[in-house]
Image 1 (cartoon, chains in turn brown, cyan):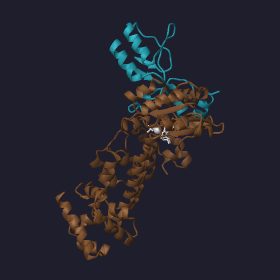
Image 2: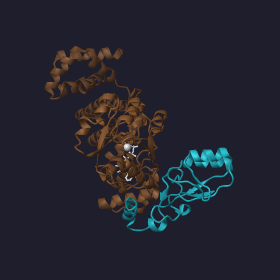
Image 3: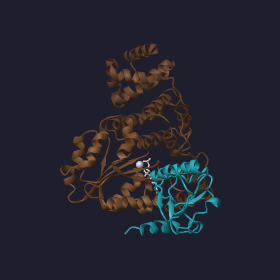
Image 4: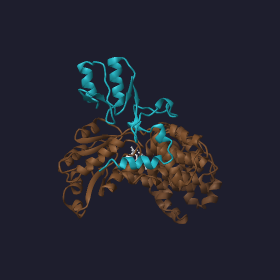
Amino acid sequence: MLWAEKYRPDNPFQLVGNEEVRLEFIKWLKNWKENSKAALLIGPPGIGKTTLVYACAKFLKYKVLELNASDVRTKGKLEIFLKPGLIYSNLFGEKAFAFLDEVDGIYGKQDYGGLEFLLEALKFSKVPMVFAANKEDERIKKLASHCEVFRMKKIAPRLIEIYLRHVLKREGLEGDDGLIREVVKSCEGDLRSALNNLQLAMANKSTEGLLTPSVQFPLEEGITKFFQAKDIYEAYEILSSIKAEPMDKLRALYNTLIVSELPLDLKLESLKVLSYADELLNRILKTQEWRQLKYLDRLLAFGLNNLLKGYTLSYREDSLSWPLKLRIWNDSKNLRDLALYLSKQFHVSSKDFLAFYLPLMIVLFKKKRLEDMFRALGLTENMIKAINKEAKSLEVD
Amino acid sequence: MKIVLNEWFKLPRLGKETFIKLMSIGVKYDKTKGFLVNEGTNLLSFSSVIKEALREEVEFYPKCAIDELVTPCDICAYREVCDRKEISSKCLCDECYNNRDIFTFYTTNLASKIE
Ligand SMILES: Nc1ncnc2c1ncn2[C@@H]1O[C@H](COP(=O)(O)OP(=O)(O)OP(=O)(O)O)[C@@H](O)[C@H]1O
Ligand SMILES: [Mg+2]
């Protein structure tokens, strides 16, 4: 388990840094009355904004009504949450506040009426509302003008150090002074990054390869580094530092795996991991729960790094598979029939087959490795014809 | 110019415009005590306002979160990586920092400040 999760403080006094702000926020929540302002926590990543909100809820015995982007898109949904009525009255006298985390991320994605609804909700809400954000763009500024703003800053290195030592103690580990110092120096005041790096450094017994949070890799370099990572933690760190949309990351992993020289069974297993990730990503896109994106990187890192121990792959982009995937989804009935049949033979879902196995078959076809394919899959002549046709048609794409 | 965070200090006479700028970035002012920069102040803006008005670089010194002593930043092992304009306004003095039970002290100290 990641230490950053395991040691998330559940009491507002167990955090480090931003002492005044923490006290002020507690005071704000304690004194909140109807028509008081909402709260907006602004600050850089990894300093405890989300943690503080949940810790204060626990400390003052509040329930947290967690809002997500889709909740704030329609006024109706918001009202359900925030007006006396359905959910609110079901709290049976419990105190509660509404929390919309990473509000800047939500509005960064696309511009819809959400902010207007939110501002209106501030007026009718019978419960306190709390927002958290990293950046202060125009929209957040507008929101801020209706809120009590709590500005949180980076954590002082000495405070980070005592927190790291506290975690090591609870893990029953002895940390070398030099190692701890290097970790603190690398984190730029970001405690999440410090904890991740500490866990990595302790596992490797070395501070080699620590990542500063501001290090961001271009897609190509990042994917290659990802496949060279020593362990799952490093793999996760690298993947989450890649400067690309999640869909593009997934696509790059997919292309790289498909054209790699991995043994077939490993290749199929790793494509399975991508299939899970793809499903998760689709769910996130549908529900707009961007916070879950963290789990996407984690899933990929844990799944692939374990599976591919001992292999080094590097970024490749010459696969035909993505357009094919779209084609399959969009039109080809023959391929669907084929998939239905083959998926039964190989005990996978036909969706998995279409998404991952078939493109693989076609790429192998292209590489003139037909013999392998026959042996691995035991196809009939008719089926081979169908694939062959598809492979040919793709060559002109 | 050395400025201790959370401690009143005097500034030479400033123009009205500069004064208004300082107020807008969260600097506190009191007729007798002078100015105060604390957690709520935007320290980046403060430095640039002072630099423009007085042509002087500002160096901030945080106080210890426990006993309010000024932190010895000049001899701290982290001095090159610590951007004091961007961190929150309290740190630890040497004595507290080197105490074996510092984490417990630190957390109970803050908890005691809430009634
Ligand atoms: N001030 C802190 N004190 C103790 N632990 C912290 C602190 N800040 C962060 N952490 C650790 O880092 C993890 C991430 O913190 P958190 O999710 O609260 O950051 P955040 O400020 O909300 O970041 P983001 O802007 O990325 O959402 C926590 O689980 C916790 O383990
Ligand atoms: Mg957060």
